[in-house]
Length: 166
Ligand code: 5CA
Image (cartoon, rainbow, N blue to C red; front, side, top):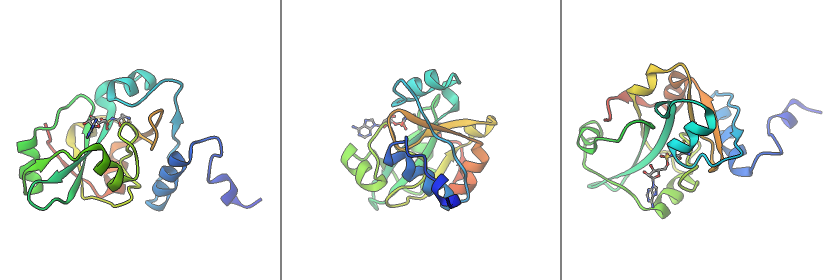
């Protein structure tokens, strides 16, 4: 058997395998965990992972009010994005796209949107508060799936700029 046959975990949903493959293409080896309970929200994910809400990475898609282009903000689960502060970093005011646009842009449904592997990649900003942890947990493409990662590795792989977002 070739090494490649072990690259995918057949018991994981296809959308989770898609995230594993995307991570691999960015030089990251991630191990998503399919949880018995929902990890759809930061609070649920923290309960399932047994970690602080602040250690959960929310992968939030915003759209530029002027350009319409999308931006990905990786935000600590404990924080609410200060849209004015974020607009200063991004260079334009922001809107929240509807669920359909999020799915179109990312290829994933809200509640399982991962920080990488999107259908159309967006420029990425990372909440600097996430860098206060050795390990954070992000969605893995499914409302019950999350993966642990060093936030520095996440920033490097996604090409994110770390900024204060709240
Ligand atoms: N799996 C969890 C933890 S990793 C997760 O994906 N959390 S999340 O915060 O990144 O994704 C949920 C977010 O989707 C919510 O915070 C909210 O900002 C956004 N959202 C929820 N409903 C809608 C909607 N109808 N339209 C646009 N955005 C929405």
